[in-house]
Length: 469
Image (cartoon, rainbow, N blue to C red; front, side):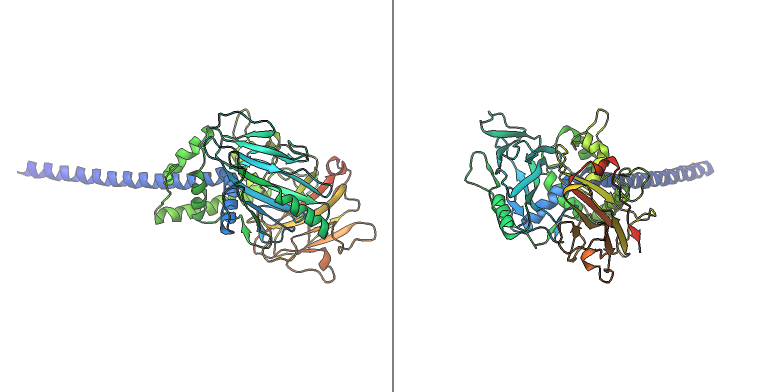
C-alpha cells in the first residue's frame, strides 16, 4: 500500500512538473511570437515607405472627391496645406495615382513646354521606383508625348506615336512640377492652361479622361499615421498591387501579425495596439536615421549635409545593387522625400540641415540665424524651406513656408550677403527675412539652388550652418 501511494505521489509530482514545463514553454513561445510580430511590423514600416507616400496621395485625392486616374494640382504655389514630403513653394505640383487593369495600358499625355511654362517630374510605380522622366529633361525632351503605361500582363503590340513605359506593378504614380516663368497673372494662367492639357485615360477609351481637381488651399495630407491606421492604408493598396519576387519575403513576414495578400486585414484590438507601438518606434527610428542621412556637403564644415545616400542616385533610385536590396537607404530616402527622378539632372541641387553649427538638433522652439554669403552660385534663384522634422512636411498654419531670392521684400546686407532667420518669432524689423517654425518638434531645412553653377559643388562658394540666437 505504501509503495502504491508513493508511486501515485511520484506520478502526480512528475505530471505537475510537466504541466509547469508546458506552461513555461507555452508562455515562452507566445512571448517569442509577440516579439517576432512586433519586430516584423517595424521592418514592414521601413520596407513600405515608398508605397505609403503613394497610398496617402490616393487617400488625399479620394477625400477631395477624386480617385485613381484623376489629377490633383495646385493652381498657385503651395501654402502649408500642401502636406507632402519636403515640397517647395515655387512650382505648381501635379499628382495622380494610376491603376491599370490586366491587358489594358493607360495613357499619360504630356503637352509640349511653352516659352512661359516648363515641366519636370517622373512616372513611377507604387513603391516610387522611377520608370520614366518627362518634360524638358525627360524622354519627350520638352516636345510633349503620349506615355503608354504597359502592365506586366500586356502582350500586345506597342502602337506608333507612343512612348512605352513598362512596369511590373498594377499601380503607377506621378508627381510633376510645372514651372511658370514667373508668378505674374499671365504666366500663372499659361501654367494652369498647361496643366489642363495633361491627360490620363485608358488606351482603349481615350474619351474616359480623368478629371482635374484644384487642391490649392485645401488640406492635402500625406503624413504617415503614427498608429495602426498606417497598416489600414498600406494593406488596402497592397491588396490591389502585384506581388513581385522581391516582395515575397516581406509578405511572408507580415503574416506574423495577420496580413495575407488579397485578404482584408482585420487585426485584433491587442494586435492593433502592438502595431501602433511598432509604427511609432519605426518612424522615430527613421527620424534619427535621416538626421545624419549622409555625409557633409562641404568637407570639414558642419551644418549642411548631402540630401541622400549615394546608393539612390547610383542605382537610379531603384536601390538594387549587385549584392543587396538597399531597403534601409530606401526607407530613409522616402521617409523624407518623394518622387525621385529616373535620372538626376542639372536643373537643381539641394543641401540639407537638421543640426546647428554646434552639432545640436535644430529645435523648432528656438531662434536661429543663417548667414548666406553674396553671389549665391545660381543661374536662376535660390530658396530656403523649413519643415517639421517629425513629418518632413510644412509646419502647420504658417504664413510663409520658405524664403527665396525671387522675393521682392527680403533685405540684403551692404556687401550683397543676406541674413535669414528661423524660429517661432521674427526678430524685430526682420519679418521679411524670417521663416516661422511653430511646433514642439525639431526642424529640417532644405536650401535649393535652381540652375546651380559650379561653385555649389567645387567648394569655391561655401555657407555656414544655422547659429542659435
